Length: 622
Image (tube, rainbow, N blue to C red; front, side, top):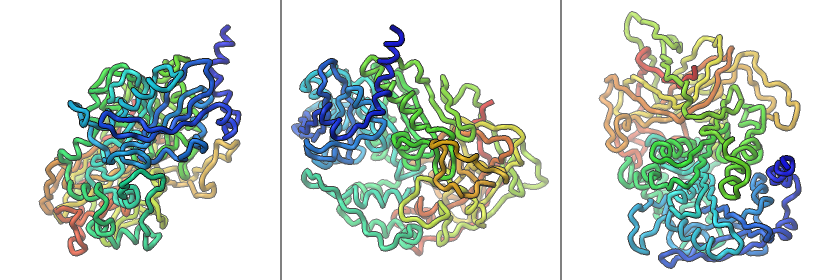
């Protein structure tokens, strides 16, 4: 009997080995396309793949997206990702919906539409109510369903997953916001600590933001860049020029410029302010990548907000991934850095599929999904923890010292000392060594030796470590600085310096591969975490304040959480700079509305970082 039960539980994984092609889909699923009415009369285009089998009742797995339900047409079958085959073989009703105002859905699209907790009439709608109305229609009108709905989505669809958790429909019992767009001013996609991530913003909105006056299956065209060298393009075009290139038709771009501080407009678009309205019957699973260049912030902070404000069953998974890599089928490496196993497969088989199988089908157990399921790079092992941060984490000061030293103890100087550099907006520090057109995803683990060689980048490092040092939790930069102007950015990077004789072992199987197997790894400076802070927001994101030139000033901010082991024989390095280009827009180093800055506003600034008074606070696991 036990062997039979084990076979049933493993069946979805065993069946994945069979090809899920168009013939299989035709034999096992029926595709339907329909419009589902919302409470205000707007109809949303919805694509359903419904199992033909009637031997059991089937749960729904819903994803709401602004990126299209394509392919359109009931005779055309979607190419499901490899990990989704477990849901197909498991008999899920797979549902994708074009959100209001996008692609084939009716209505007007609003970016990160604010949640309305006080809806009173049928015209009071938001993404939560659209989810409610969609789910209500599905469970009442699709035959042979079991009355349970799971919702998931990666990136922008992750935002809609969070909204689904707020829908309060009793059928919605399992929700997984994955790399969810959460706060576009504080840390996701388009701003980090108020600094504008111009390269992502302009490349995305110059196409995505184009108006769609009527439902369509045809996507927008992108911007015709005059050069494929993104460093050169953005150097020629400060934000005031980008506004002209974008034109007047893209509403959200104009809104970005109209709200240069963290005002009520931004705060209304932050779901963390409303997660207390998630019902306790909803199981939550936040998923993200430690090296997600777009939405690392959202995964960590949705989890933390739900933990702080609700009593719902809430779990987090953070793997060593770029944006969405856990759904790619390959989690063996990122750029030049290896992880020694296929972390994406491990996640799918041990976390996501069991999560939905348990809550939507009553199969197996969710007991093996810990509170925090975190992959520690360096050590290259999964840790399944009862709390996050770990209970044995201790914030520990790592001091910046004279002569480029880092130390866990203050080394007394006879007189106050500082390191200095000149930040020149005309020659900003690049975020990566090579020439690129699109922003790379690998920069999050890239070799930082190119930056360490620049005179406008400060470099501090420890002696060679005699024991492993593991960090797990939030990372804090606490700098004492002075600048010769009235504003500046501060970019702090935490780096793992590999030994001079380091090299990866030769791959023994297909799960141990490198993107560039010939890359010189000895002395590699692996970026563990980097983050920017726009200096004028150091005391308040709502009310920026100018620096007093040459006056020592504290700049303290929290970087996204980390999970990494610096191995014995490695070194810990910190780099500090005031530009990260063209990833982040150039700060003119003048207190002003940067969106209106023109070339004459940009000026050099002398930056001083006071040693012994400046430190990183590492979340060291004891």
